[in-house]
Length: 240
Image (tube, rainbow, N blue to C red; front, top):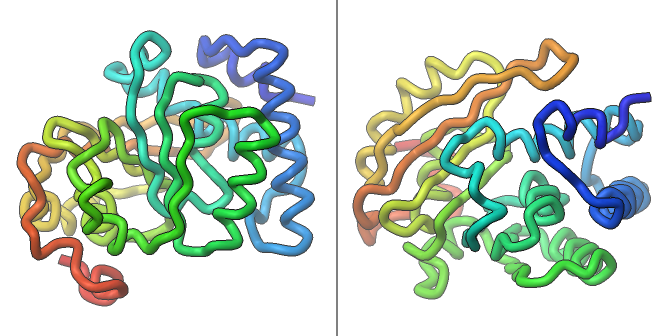
């Protein structure tokens, strides 16, 4: 059986026994909660370690700019965090991340509060809000070094959800799968309009799989215009 340590060794990520125990506890909490609340379709431990944990952690070795994350504090917000992927695995592996978890479903936020408490994670804030609402809050807008999202939505919509949170000079990184060329082309206008610039697309494959993944890296070059994000639901119905 291939466990998390198998995959982290391939990515040159070193985890202590305590961190491995935290990952194990987290997985068990997600699987247990999944019996009463839809958090994931993946409940096999080996598949969970690969498709949730290794996939989340692959951001650090894939993105050169983030390889120094263990050496300096980084502020990060995970928009539409769901069960906490990718940000909770990143926080466990790199404890000095100053993390904010944002989700529209209060039940998921309550679950994550329990995870944070059980694992003893520090400098983690949870926020119950829709992405569009949070993106207009003065304490969250133009604030974060890194904005992540593994949510399933087109890139134009995700950019409107997420880029407002990034500070000027910060990064919005979207986890994507499959061929994204068409999606990238259709998102060009939105990225520019919202103050961003497509900086890089990093393609990779998860270890021992045929699963192609991409990190779309959008640099925030100037403040997002005050008109954005639009009212809840608009970005999904009418992508820019």
